[in-house]
Image (cartoon, rainbow, N blue to C red; front, side):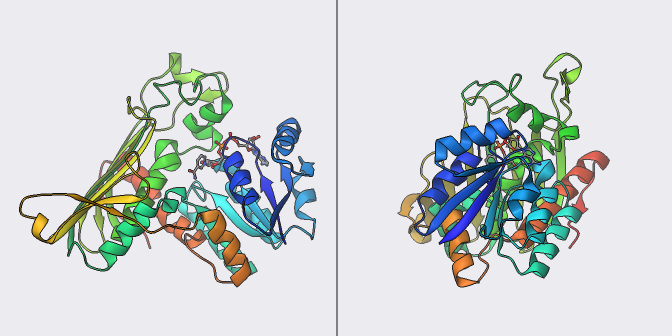
Length: 349
Ligand SMILES: NC(=O)c1ccc[n+]([C@@H]2O[C@H](COP(=O)([O-])OP(=O)(O)OC[C@H]3O[C@@H](n4cnc5c(N)ncnc54)[C@H](O)[C@@H]3O)[C@@H](O)[C@H]2O)c1
């Protein structure tokens, strides 16, 4: 039996509880939130025995082997380092940290402590993206030349996910002082992984980040709304391919849409998670000249929660690990500098 604890009892933690709760041989034994009432409510909903508002006290328990860190971005480093120091295996939410230096420290600490470490780039759980990577790696589309990828959300316009101007779970995401790197850190991190996982590392970036006016003086209560809400990236991949990646919270008409098109000199692949999580569109071979597309079913993929548990059982750390989280963070750091200085930047290794 693997005994696991959750840190942070907010909205995403529910996904972790549901997924881990379904895995045989895993028991969620404790939850910690700085807001004890939230932890109690969460524990009640998911049948978790023990609640804490003192992380060190929870981490001191020797029967707990692993933690899922679902705190806000700005506290991932502090809370993850505490868990690693206590010898716990760790699945941490994305973005791993708020800058590459912190993310590298976390990766080094996890490696030195010899604990399983993974970052929740959750869209890798879609069979479609795994299959797109397999096809591209096998050379099905030839040399990749052009990539375009978008992550479109609309919660600054649509109330489908709640009221961004009234709820702390949205307000912290709009405020740099609350540890947010804006849409770039929140979901830009996903689209950078979603494009570079199948295509290869990004080596150069030119990025424009924009923060639109949303409230009088761009402030609501304690929250200065200064974090970017639209990110436009022009990138070069290690294989020489060029691409545009974008992330926005202003995509009226979309709730949460990820798309990726990869064009090579022999064919092309499209992934659109709104259309299907387990199918890819391909244009290959004889279909290239008439530009005809067909649908291919992708084989099933284990979720990150299952892969994390399997990593603990086998002792072999699956991907995406903290080192990958740090590598993606380096792309985000370059995006910030690129936007501030209005120039292209090579990604620091
Ligand atoms: N992988 C994905 O697809 C995905 C989706 C949504 C959110 N996320 C990530 O999950 C994380 C949490 O997001 P959320 O929407 O659940 O936020 P949230 O604001 O709803 O919840 C965060 C919780 O953490 C608690 N908390 C804050 N500091 C703490 C600390 N030091 N110790 C213990 N608890 C603490 C808060 O009280 C709150 O209950 C973020 O990093 C976010 O980027 C990932």
